[in-house]
Length: 237
Image (cartoon, rainbow, N blue to C red; front, side):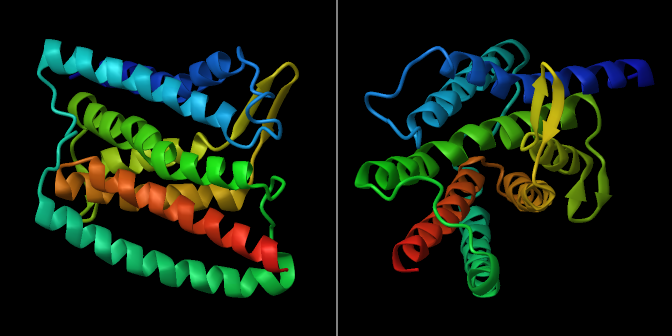
């Protein structure tokens, strides 16, 4: 494949990956959630993730039927996936314990919504059931598979493929808020780098287990742990 065609596919892939969440935003903005979610804690972002998940699933269905592409939506190599999952969860719990031990005395960020049962249950439910599945379909199953097929299936080194590196970086970029009128970028650089680092592990698991299900569980686990601990300490501090 020529360099020009690879560059074209690269640009198109980035547009799809970053454009799909934007479409989710546009659709989610069409509805009024104040009756069921007056604090805006969970319904808008839930609708957003459902819409972007539906869009990417539709693309996967089309490409799998027309081009016979396998996006690894099944259980894949269960032994590898479960082993990776257990190891990751243990390491992340240690990491989270260290982070909270350091930040709580100095710069603890409390739960961002009023501590009502509805807000806590709704937001934790979103993190558990929608955040991982929706985002991993986009940034692992679709991004890594399409990049490897269309652009490069080579590796930077043994534990990092070009496709995984690409997906992790775009995943980090997706955590940057972009405004066009006027043009403005808003982001937390630590969050962007944190997302890229986690994206590497999600992608590595996806490639090794041949399944997106384990990265989905990993992703939801990390979010629930961080949000759950924030809720707990907001209560007691």
